[in-house]
Amino acid sequence: MSNQINVAIVGVGDVASALVQGVENYKKNPGKVIGILPEITQYSIDDINFVLGIEVNANKVGKDLSKAIFEEPNCNMKLFEPGFLDAPVVKGPIMDGIDSNIKEIIPISEEQQEVDVVEELKNKNVDVTVILLPTGAHKAVKFYAMSALDAGACVVNGMPSHVAKDPEIVQKAQKLNLSLIGDDVKSQIGATIIHRSLANLFPMRGAILDRTIQLDWGGCSDFCNLLTPQKDGKLRYEEGKRQSKTEAVVANLQNKDTVDCQISAVDYIPFLKNQKEAYMRLEGRIFGGAPVRVDITMFVQDGNNSAGIIADSIRVSKIAKDREIGGVLQSASSFFNKHPPEQLEDRIAKQRLVEFIEGKRER
Image (cartoon, rainbow, N blue to C red):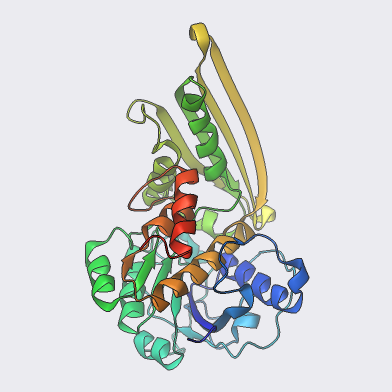
């Protein structure tokens, strides 16, 4: 059993940039490793080996992954400059990933040839394919998930599009003994996990949560993509993302069907770059029916906030591959993602994940 985990990244955006920078930085500076789960002992951060990137952005295609991660419109903080990785970025098929106004900031070259994705993944002996495409790229996400399985790779889906909830993909993964982790990565210390924790605090303390809102804004390409102008001049928030975030926040509330929960991205502000800002307000009732309101604002580097979770997902996927476990990794999906097949309290999801890592739970 090799300790090396060959990884392909589909969508070389800001999360990919943070992931590659972080992993390669930790390889050079092992004493500085933070932001990953210590319970995963079978594989270290050093074992992650980036071998391939797949993109449509003409500025990234043809470059080594170590260089492509710094090409526009990427705007994640430059914390470390990796050396040559021998991980070419190749051009994948153009599907529905640039149907929104994100097409205004992603250059496409007709001269660059699309590759056979399955063959590229096979040639690089990819163990885990990480999908980090633009939100709303539903057809593309399914295409890459199926292609990864055809190439013998496990799938980590960081996007809201269904992979772990798609019956066709799940059935294929089970048949091939390849794992799936998804859907929609839950950031390390992000607005969703904070909002969810505060929402769950209400019933835990005997209070009632009546209504809550969350407003997000930022300057990375994801916000450009999430908000699409309509013919009437209004901005449309990508519905899959709204559903994923809302479900993650209220899933474990007994009154989830009656609590008024409104979540939306409100604007794309380019000068913020990869900084995401969020405002949350929770309103409810405590003893005697007295009102209570909680307001919180947070600021975070969005790419880095997801990258550590992806790194852990990669390592857990390789554990599953070694054990020949196919289909959805329920414990990992519930802990790492906003929109898993099974929503669990974070404490329970973490416990089950550790049990899986230790070999005490099948999945």
